[in-house]
Amino acid sequence: GENVEQHPSTLSVQEGDSAVIKCTYSDSASNYFPWYKQELGKGPQLIIDIRSNVGEKKDQRIAVTLNKTAKHFSLHITETQPEDSAVYFCAASDGGFKTIFGAGTRLFVKA
Amino acid sequence: EPEVTQTPSHQVTQMGQEVILRCVPISNHLYFYWYRQILGQKVEFLVSFYNNEISEKSEIFDDQFSVERPDGSNFTLKIRSTKLEDSAMYFCASSEVAGGDNEQFFGPGTRLTVL
Image 1: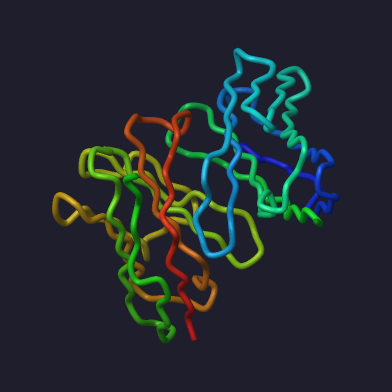
Image 2 (image 1 turned 60 degrees about the horizontal axis):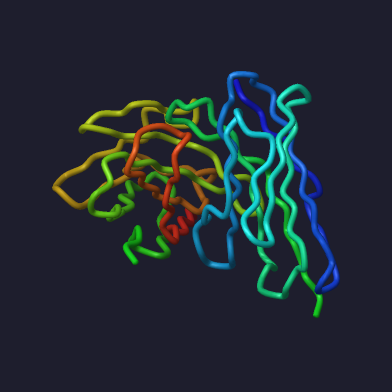
């Protein structure tokens, strides 16, 4: 079955710096890669996603890149702000009903 | 903005007892999911549900688990005989369109503690 590895587990950056979180997946049939942000006491919330027919997608300060050959995708947050502090999960799906999550990255943005 | 709601926010139960976790998905959504997250670990898929039947389930979702849509608004997860290792955060999610390749909206979760 699909396995998603996520690194780092913890990331601490200074406000205004960039943050990069990386994930790899094992199942070449996966074609959809969402990223979720989980704030304390809340459920995961989708922040950006990318499909396998696209190599990069950007939404304001957030961008995601996908390398299908390497089975690797990354989340980039630029100009980080304290409110970006949260746990971020990558995930993968082959279009079926099951979504496989990574282990999460706890991001701390220091003011 | 419509949202997924879950009750209770925290459930404490004794090992061996049955628990029912409740969810109210977004009203026009037709696809429903349960996930669990053991403290500090990844979010794990349990089951998906559509048209009053399970569409997919994981190996975690064994015979002690069941799901039901008892009426037009609620979606429940029942754990028949709880074990210590069932202690986790349980998230309900719903989506308007089928498939894991479409946005799922998550509820705030129910924290289940089995003593």
